[in-house]
Length: 314
Image (cartoon, rainbow, N blue to C red; front, side, top):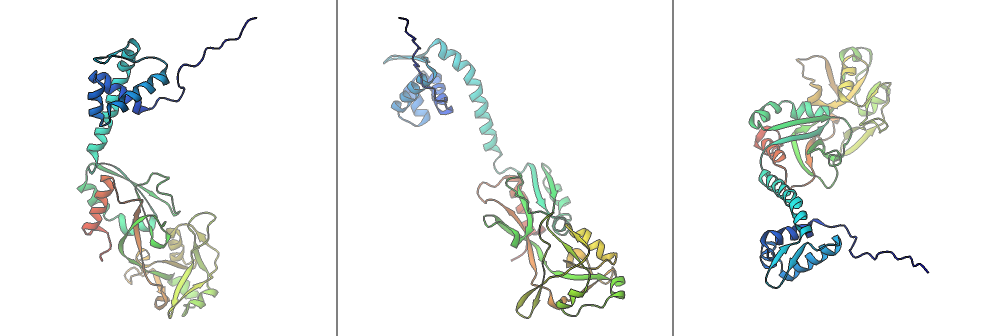
């Protein structure tokens, strides 16, 4: 009778981890369990157990040892010859990363809306680049509330009420006031609204954050009460630039940031109405995930803003 004899597995098939290989390399370098234990800050018993487990996982002896000496086996020598350069490269990479902590270099990736970029960032960018020649800046402009962590941005700039709760947020610039504006041509053909409710009869140019999302609320302060007017109109955009240009062309009324609209008399293109009912102004915020271990490039940008270039003053 022929028996089907399968060779028993003499080794542990659990994947070999990097810690076990580090222990082996340290013992092989010192030719001593005791000196390896001292370098690794563990007990000699722990080192011995780690080597035995490694040999069990590999199915071969990597170290020949007696009570007085430790030597590499033939296969252990082959393992060390390939392992040592790889570990040294890892150590070099770790030293490089540690050495870069706090240094101001690399690519700073920012996500912002066009409005925030125009009002807050565009004017200060040249000075920041001059002050930090080793930092590149990549600015992604969109109107959606991007996941800055998932998209690998260092920081984002958005209105405070739109931020996720687990973000560090720093107020930027002056508070932004929302106003209703229209062109002289539009008001030549339509009466100026005297109260927020009067907007119901006007062609209002609406805006939304992104495709498929709701349009922005037209909110006003009536006495102590916040009032939202359900405006309507034939134009809907997802970018305030387009809203503003349509208003300048006489297509209707726009609900925009006063600083972005620049409704000063010198320009003479847009007229602001319902100013007495504008809601309380709000700040844009620079936001990022955590304060601890902040990358040097982001720390440089935050410090630059704190120096007076952009952060709101308390």
